[in-house]
Image (tube, rainbow, N blue to C red; front, side, top):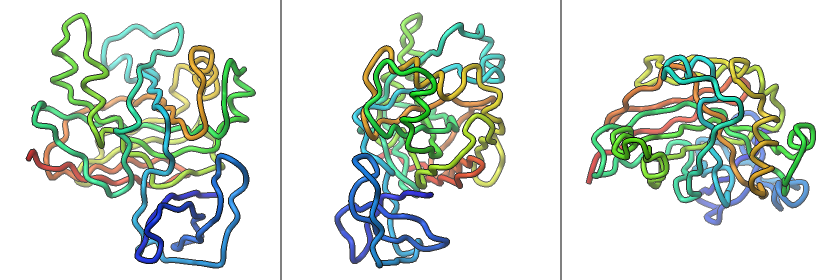
Length: 259
């Protein structure tokens, strides 16, 4: 099942819907407080604006999750999941523009698989964590790399990753996915820049969610980013960045110009 959050010419209030082929069927309710109830209203996907598929209280972002990325960065393989937080305000959706902040001179992409939490999760086992996952989406952990480096030994992870629009997620939530064995790729203007598979992750999806839940309570709609594979690099104003996750689809965003 593919769950979208959208607006349209006839539905100006953000609504949830279910993707059926190239159309969206409006649904009543929320996927986080019970089953969505489809209505009879169908709208072509081409006539709706897809929003970020959920409204998190926080975004928990895994780092150094792929062996290939650790090797690329010449970093030691961690003994436990590494993470940082991104504010909910940096979430944006499919086809939304990525702002280029005036404070930065170098933006970089990071293709990721996003996990959407379905219910309150605290001190969960990996098995319990898996049961509490609603589904998965494509994500791009946009980073102002020059700002990240300004802190010296005190790396400015939060500052460099917290700007509004620095976490595109979408285009929808896929509820049925073998998340520990899917291809994750990224193109810039049609050129492949990243190509990996979640089987290269140091920790499984369930292990990561479980680990984070022993540190903080994960709430319905919270997003867990699971790290990026080998091949991070620069994006510039005007670039079109596409993140594709096998079994989900493609998230597309254009990089804006400084204003």
